[in-house]
Image 1 (tube, helix red, strand yellow):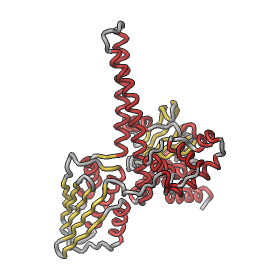
Image 2 (cartoon, rainbow, N blue to C red):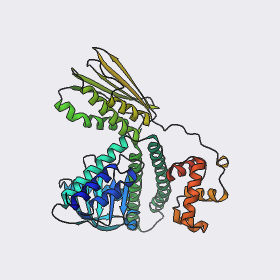
Image 3 (tube, rainbow, N blue to C red):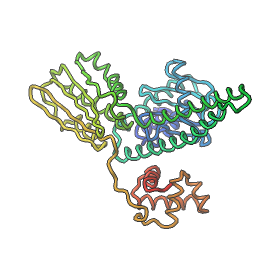
Image 4 (tube, rainbow, N blue to C red):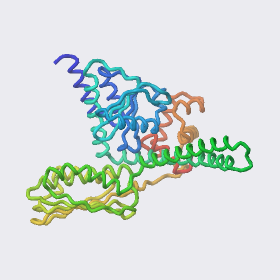
Length: 419
């Protein structure tokens, strides 16, 4: 094995074992010998708390928006060029050359200023990207409780900020529209042109708000339809009749993490049932009682499905990661009936009053600036201390308030009235 092969294998191993937060950095490092870039962004709607994972030039990745990524994805879909597209696009606040690559899991990879190295560069990049996208999908499906709490907190905070921006700008633009439509104004042509501009701006803001909401929640009916599409190949080739009982169309929308994990759980249950001898029919049903997503999967097999089997035990862990429950009822000769209940809201957490956190004066100042959206550098500048001192205070206050991350600390601070 030569040095290049050994390096590639090491990169693949690092990519396969990387935590979600490091996935973009690992992918960029692995792809560098084949495709250099100034910045790399992964966009996946499965991770509702962190739909973007970024690596590279901070001046670019700090300005990448969901609207830019949506526009690039739309261009990629229109091109229909075997899942990839290259050209100039708005990315990171400016127009620059990009390469966009899709994946089977519907995730998107975008490279800024791509520079291929050799004829195999495109193939190697696609191989590494497919591996990374699949690992992201698996990690989200197996997410531990700590990830789910943090992801939901980030989703809720992003939705809150976006809603505030929409309300603010909508009020301004609606006032502008009212003024420009007034017959007291003289220049009709100018009024018409300005009205058109303002109306389009309003549509853009509302679209952004709907788009952000779509990342946080998914209608139960469309989530169930995606499950049917996932199981379509099994229905076509196994000869087993998979029946679907539709959920109520007006049922409560599902948090993104719940919808994604629920589909993975049902897929796992169906595959476990198919492994039994004599199964001819499987029925799956979703319902929503306003508090829980209720899942029922039933087969007509020999009734030998065991909750202690490795495949089933893994599914139980997925359900418990969502603070849910799973029951398996088997009747020999008649089949198995599996009932799953997944709460739609995160488990209640005891939140301490700010005074009971026993924060020092400086720690409270740091938390207030953190809650206001300041980064470490901004906090350091406002308090006239070093960034290392900021990190020291953050570690202490995380411990005192019971937060495991920056995002969770922000959510706890906002819940207790800090802004």
